[in-house]
Image: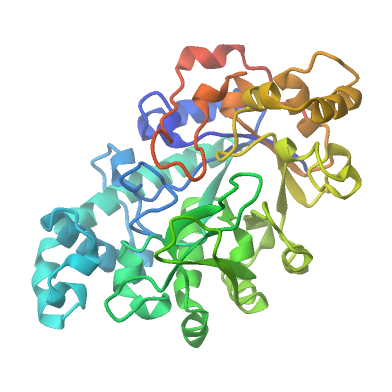
Length: 421
């Protein structure tokens, strides 16, 4: 059965936390949708980005206001390490772990034993997050709404994960990254994107049967119904950038584990329909074959669908396959209204012919998505509200000014239903 939904991060809700989440789920059902897709709910970095979190596992406890504490016995793999990391970091003026005293940086047993006596408050924070989030998920599921979560494939260097498991990441002896991750120049950026996140030592992951990844996927599916793996191609190959470089031009591709990790992840998940593979950008055919080999849904974005060789463009609406989730745009795109205002005449004429209208509006693009062959359609809330570029969620490669857009409840009153074609 086809599904439709809304892309909106929880920080865009009027209060910016779970106090508004149940009301938003009610809105999703009101417009006839059954999916709510969010951005990562791990703690954000200093620029408010949820894609460079200090933890791949911890919940952002600031999202929850409940005093009730939920059970977290399934989270022992990561919980103590996160509580130690966040507590020690806060006591050292939030300096990176590589700048801590050596006994803390290198996790000397005596030092860790001393700090374990101080992590109770953060454990409680995580238990409260667990309670609030699972209550939200139950509320959604009882009303027929599925929650889609988001996993950034790479993690921040200054994170509990790298500090607790340095052997799993490409680091020098002093703990600094050997290379950092990103993507080469593409339609988002002529210099490419230098994310600054660390790369994996896949041989070490393999030696541990990919336990870190299995635990990560299991954690996410305790919180969400479906998980989108951001930058899925990183399982096939990753763009490695010299640390000293300010942009991504001089990077090179490092081979990933491919089938080896997918077999482990799917064994853990048990159901391939619970995974969405974000396969956007410069994607070789081997990545698409890897995704299809495990029957994973990929992504189509209409803003990429109207240039180049249309017959070979997977984002061109008539070409969209059933094994894709279709979006008008993502959190990294301009809003569709802003994008339409910037289109060249050639692309605009393609759309005009497709919708049989000279006056193209945002709703025309939404209808193209809804009428496609995709099994799921997800529309950013900004597009449903016909908003311009000033409400864009993120501009890739720009550190400041992102992740700030917030709507008002009265804005939602004029949104029509998402009727699938």
